[in-house]
Length: 547
Image 1 (spheres, helix red, strand yellow):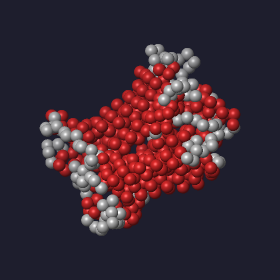
Image 2 (cartoon, one colour):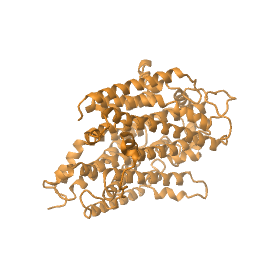
Image 3 (cartoon, rainbow, N blue to C red):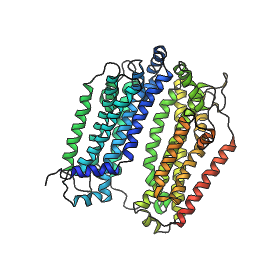
Image 4 (cartoon, helix red, strand yellow):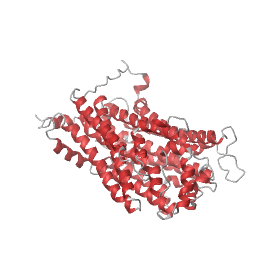
């Protein structure tokens, strides 16, 4: 039989299964890049203001760590600098989820074995997964080529940026195809692919932030670095696209070669043997929930420490960076809730940390539904553990994990800012905004981060309520709630939303620290709301049928 027999039919099936997720990813990447271009055109309408921004932002090593080197001062150059690499990261994440879902995840769930019983070649499923991811990246390229010129960017630069982002996703398609053959399961394959993506970001970040005489060549060792090195709006280097295509082709060929050698349901990398006997900690559902979540929490905490430390370090000189745009300065002040631009910037970072913690807590709570649909809840509940204890265990891990993430984000931002400004050992303040106020320190930013915890837990508690009351729509409903909160908090006032709609978000009522006033009343009401939603979900979970 032809090794690719049935690949076209399986590809159409994969596209149909992803008919909601795939357009959402494509829209996120396209809208983010087009919206960034539109924002820069409005915030920095003149060449003089863009030049001031380019000189200040391009000379900040912390910003180079986050966004890369800045080539030029045009609107297109600023757009490619601010969002180009992150659009490539989102494209790589989309690719990883698509490829693993249609290869190793289907293999673990038994769907691939069922499909393989028909007239299907050995390489058909892998081919379908790779083609589905390639189609998604092609859609990103086409939409960006159409959308970016509509924002006023040059057509040639828009095409170069679109092709660089799509080619980066294509390169990670090949990388993920190889990871799917090496790991022994879907979770391991995703972890391996995420690790390679993280390594690519770190190599690029170190190379870009290196000073004179530093290892700037590391940028060339990363596929993410190739995106900025294409220089879309500063004399495009079209030949850099060949690097992406070479890496993608090598990954595709290696994935097919490895797939032909490995056994079904196994990986080429040896499994790490576990302990012969379980520890006493695993006798209850709380220990099991922690065991399943500790790796994920460690990954989130590591990412938060890196991102918020660099973002905190970027706070030095933020006033001069935003000084050429009164609109952007006012926006940061609105998000931060204070009048001092540095405090407003750091408070905006803590708001982002709260939203990230809410995302982690929501994912942790939804593990209840994943265990239920995957058939893992029944063996657990067949023991002495009841449903209430099972649900409370997962909630406890979600609460603790959210608190850890906020603490890590606050400490990292405070350390980054303190080390960069040389004020690490000074006295900090949570509420000072006047000219004589002390600089925010790690301790004060730790408190500012933890102040977002009650609001984050309200989102997680809503997810718990959906798991109990509406299990079939819990996953989609919980992520929709979080997405709506993100839109309200980040874009609500810019969109002209009414006050009652802005008040729907729990983060609207959380204190904006450092710089804003502190009151226990809103924190108490948010905590009571979280307890109420969680209680509704637990009560419904205890009474309804599983499945």
